[in-house]
Image 1 (cartoon, one colour):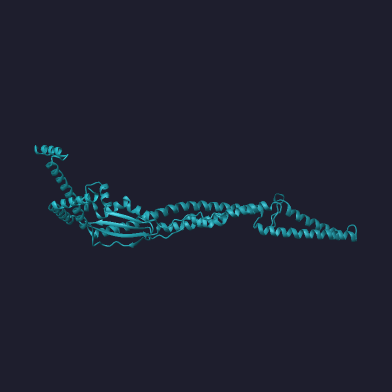
Image 2: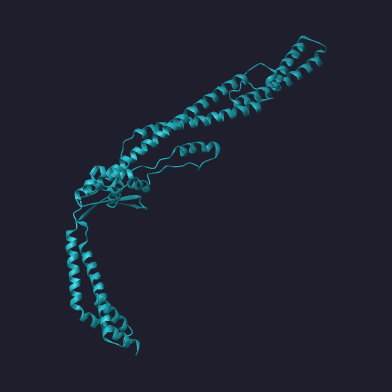
Length: 400
């Protein structure tokens, strides 16, 4: 027999089976459908309210970004700053899913009484409450959808609104706590930095008093110019003295005067070229012998003072920002889609329940009919391999 013939026979057998059992199948399907419809009408309806929220916080630089942006010019360390950005949606979901939030919801709406769980442990009430709330995060927009379900549509809306309000309140509390800890830390760091700055400024004053270095660049420039002028005067005086000796011969009052003038110029030049330790005179002009070392020390002190001034300025700015943040009471959550009272139930889905019940009845009825036909065919045909087994089963069943 060909495959097509076998398929035709199978289809005919299937059609014959449904014709034979049509009344039974129709009855069981109708009964299951009616039963499912009755159950769906008896089940208490559930309504769902939805609210969509996201962070209302604007991106802001943290203290690291502020300091690094200002110190970059000093040390070439730009690009290492960190930013805190807005509140991520994952953080909002964590607040919504927290045990604290669920307990607040249970207490606010007396869900123990609503769910008839007055004598149940709080953990079971929390499970029941969590089964009626759901939160979905949109990774692209970082918005969070808040779902609340209840038999009372007004209570479902109130629950969704309560979850949003408590999320905002909880985040404000966490923000204030974080700002307070940051203010305390920055305040301590600010005191240390100010003390360090004062010590550096005192060191600079002592250094200036000991060395006379006020502005190395201008002082070196003035010293070099003075030394050049003195060298020019020295050469001129030497030339004039030699000329007087040649013309007047021997000693004269003018030659004596020129020798004294030359000695004074030489003494001044030696003063400029001697190390600071060899003279106690302090003037605006520097001693060229130890000027590089003095200038290097001065520049290092000024660099450290400038760094500490920048740190103090921005620590003070961040300290004031943390104080404001600690006492700020502005909303942190935007309600993109406020919760509204539902008018259409989400459960039970009566159409789906009746269709599923009808399909289940069809499968069960067909399986039952096939088993009955198989048993009847095997028990009526002695040539069937299962004849003896079926007969034995029927015999043992009839003796009961």
